[in-house]
Image 1: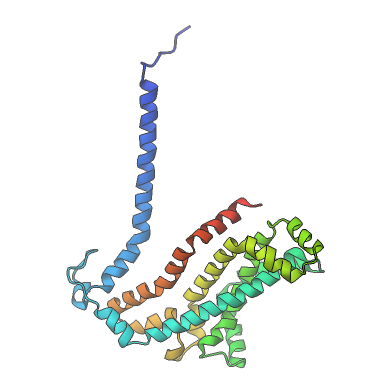
Image 2 (image 1 turned 120 degrees about the vertical axis):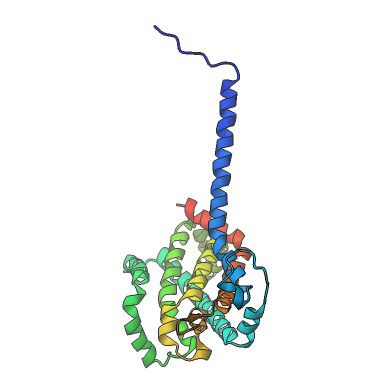
Length: 291
């Protein structure tokens, strides 16, 4: 029989400290890599937008030697960018509001009301959302042409709702199912109507999740490119994703103005996510933990 070697006093404590220090190094290293990976494209865009044209192709660095605002001045005074921005804002905000109203009402009806075909409607909602847009743009173009929705920024709203409303409905269904039915039953017993129950119970309890859904719907409408390119030809009616192509003339890329436009176009989603960060985190956490 052999005896196991006894470690010297204090060895276990040193080992724990070494493992703790190693975990911190791995954690800090991982966060540093993630931060650089995430911020590098934005830093590169900002740096390029601040360089004069003569430095863009000859100077490779993250800090420009000469800072110039000529691209931003050209963007706002010599292009239709403000019209693109206005069109994108109107389309994205309108689509989000209408999609949220339709989605909340549909999700409430599917989760709380009993009617024939309820399961079919719920499944059809997600199937409709999963349909590839590339397969639908020809029939949707014909529909938009028949209803005279082409060449109008507002004409994009009903087209975007075809995808945004099922998306909002499906996500709202997932969350509404986690709201205890006893709360609504108590309100109904006290004489509240279905609409009062929805406004007074469901919506206040679901605000974090609804904020996340609205943000996703807004981002999808803000960044949509395919149908905007297909349906809009007039320059004054274009949205930002399509309007950015105006900074490419033949095989010449106006990188300075293009990067300035990209940076300004990314500000609304970033600001909204930053301002609603608390609700977004709460909504994502609620969706991850509730069953």
